[in-house]
Length: 244
Length: 238
Image (cartoon, rainbow over all chains, first blue to last red; front, side, top):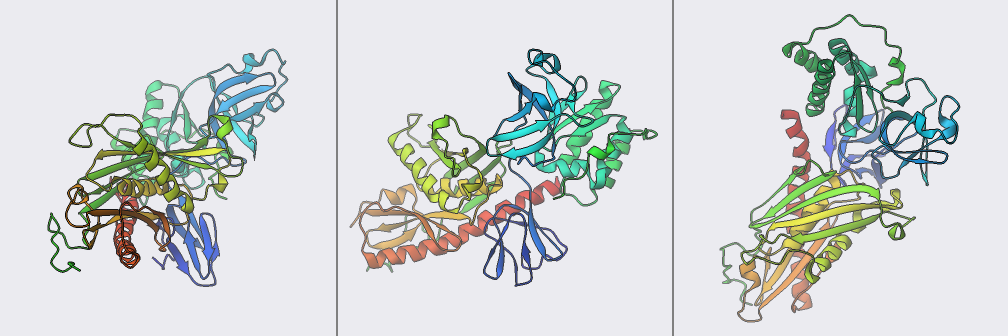
């Protein structure tokens, strides 16, 4: 397991990934003497002498800047508590709404049980702070929302959003992927939405295969998908790949 | 010593374990899960979290908490056992926590808890060791940062002979000095995280027993490693 040059391999905690002085320990790894040792289970990858472990399982770890989808679980006097599937509850303050909201009219913007798209603008010891000030954020009124494993989100998005573009072209649906694993699909017809959902579930099933993009294209052709003319999607820039 | 002509009831060699296997990802709803089977003993472990610790007064603002729950299912033994927590199961839960905590890096999860539920669905001695083996794999599968893996095995002294991985039949051995049961857990690098001794043994023989456990843990580690690695390949084939 010492030679991982340009090849990903599964590592388990305590396993030596590479030996030698000229490597740098990245995320999920630790330097012990001459060795770079993994401290979590995942795929080990080496790029430019930087060794890191890409997690494959586990709960979602919130990070600053992530777009997430969550459910309003509580309204306080100055904001909303939103459940985004993390250990800490996320808080959306009144000040972080795009327009002025009166303090006693909070439930006009969002009621308990409503689903919203939000962005994390800070993670601190006390909790997670959210905002809905940017474009594309805010309450979800129509479409379907479901959850996948948050570790598979980068696969659903694809390189520079390639995968999500294919799904859009074949199903004619708007898709918002939250980094916490929640996905919102909005289309003209419920059939289109369910078709897109099936496609995403297919991706999560095959997420470790090579050439996934081609396989998904093939899957669409086999399942009677018709490629539509691409509309201009102004939301595109929000779905950058998660790369730190 | 009578070591040479000692016969184990099931005809195993002195340092031979029961046939064992491991599997990862058996519980879809859990954040991490694993099964470990040794002979007729089967343990399943499910990991949930890190999640917020409740009640709040149990929270530790410095590091996360590991909470293990060991449970023997009522149908796991031939004589139905009363379901629910007992003196024995609370003790083993605590022992499991202590065996696993040294390798976990919980300082990244203040005020949080990692729940590990271990269920013994079939018991034939060595259930705490099987539980620890399953729990270690489940924790790794759940993506909890760990310094090393933990493998566990029970070594025993039957009359004057040291044997590895006792079965229930051997645990009830009555001849000579009777049975001494020594469950040992250790990391892959050879550090002992858990050690229990039930009976009596000379210090010289104890060292011999630890050496034996070390070798067996090595074998278990390979199986745990393979199980964790194979769980990815299976998804590739599916």
